[in-house]
Image 1 (cartoon, one colour):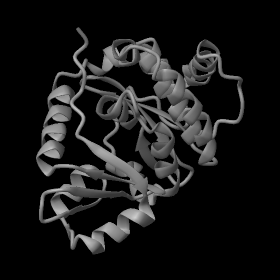
Image 2: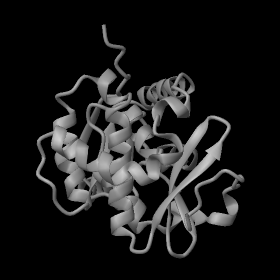
Image 3: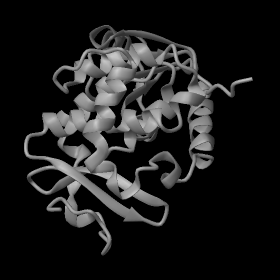
Length: 233
């Protein structure tokens, strides 16, 4: 039997309506929970959680903070048991150079016509992924191709950016480097799948990365090693 991720009960609604509920229910901003959920999390007197994502027209209202905490604990447990990085990305050092072909191959396998690498493309990919068992999505070759497509969408939208394969103790980590020498990790797409499959929001994630400067850090803050495939290579 498939070990499905725990998902808290929630209602999805327009952010403008959720903001009204924050006022009507006298919900209080929870800074600690907001950091963990990557948005503004408001808690009501009866324990509901209203989450307003940083870059989305939609919000989630969770039935119970206890369920949200249980969900976060489940995500942490799964992350701790996650495969070695070298297992997730078998292409290793060559992943960046292989990414365009991997992305195009994914679209062909899912029956999606090739088009511009923009966030809307990921919306079509998400719909096709829902019909595929979780265990197939969360391992190569499908997982590697999904991360390649996400990275290619970011690279295409952020002009002048390129791949950087960083050598780590666990394997080769793929990052995108902007022309301003700032980096963002592509592995966040794995986290999005891990936490939210079968309803991930890769499209929202890419839109967030492309438009949010805080998702990029100076390349000097990312330790490099001698074997790295640097942006200039």
